Amino acid sequence: MDFINKLKAIWDKNNSLLCVGLDPDMPNLPEHLKDGEAPYFNFNKAIIDATAELVCAYKPNSAFYEARGAAGIQELQLTCAYIHENYPDIPVILDFKRGDIGNTNSQYAAFAFDYLGADAVTVQPWQGGEAVQVFLDRKDKGIMILDRTSNTGSGEFQDLLVNDRKLYLQVAQNVRDNWNKNGNCLLVVGATFPQEMAEIRELVGDDMIFLVPGMGAQGGDTGATVKAGLNLAGTGLVINSSRSIIFASSGEDFAEAARQKALGFREEINKYRGQKA
Ligand code: OMP
Image 1: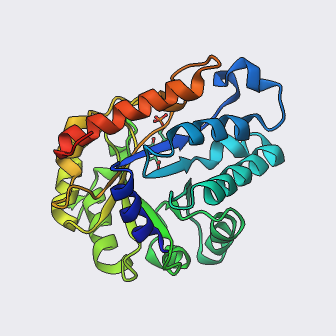
Image 2 (image 1 turned 30 degrees about the vertical axis):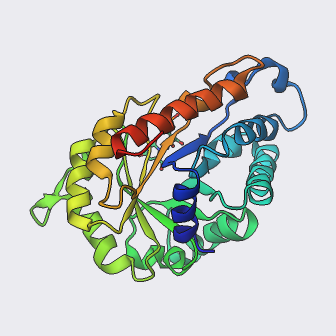
């Protein structure tokens, strides 16, 4: 099944717009996992098993794995394979924010889709549609274009006026009109900018799905985010939280603590969707 339909099915099945970000780092890992074999994989496995009925996606960020070299990349591959084998209806979003000239992008796409089996990736739009075409051509995959990012300094370029409108609106329009011929584009819009999210929703309409990072550790407001980004079907959002869920406890109870946190997030999001928890 292609990414968009997989996502729609799991939104429904798990009654959830929540994505758990799998961004482990050594200092925050529970002590009993640090010295063992494959610490990130074993950590992720426990988090995944504890939250699989509460989420609509998992989003490992490649940086946390690349930082440990070959061992980290192997654990990223094991994590993706574990999700596909044990929870095949949950999509894996590889967050790697890549972007380069076309023939280099084809190598990034091969890593994400062919080696890791990711269902979707994050990419940057800076080099233009011609450069990202090799991603867009992967019709069955989700291509998540950075638009209005969650970091505090994101306005430095994204708010600049281009054609009398802010750059993030221009990017959103290009994606809507020119890049989304295969219906596989999404936009990345931070939870920390609900007003901008509402403008983007108005511009691109109901069908475009947003990946929304910035809940939890970065302080995004759940109510404001859901109200700004939700479409008329009561969906249209993949709301990510990483640290606030996966590091809810640093003790041996870390997986159960993550589950409780994910339950709370799902419930809160659903409250603003007008959905039962
Ligand atoms: P927490 O702040 O721990 O919830 O992690 C947020 C995750 O979302 C990290 O993996 C970030 O790299 C990612 N992210 C953002 O925080 N802001 C953005 O604008 C875009 C992303 C992303 O593409 O997921």
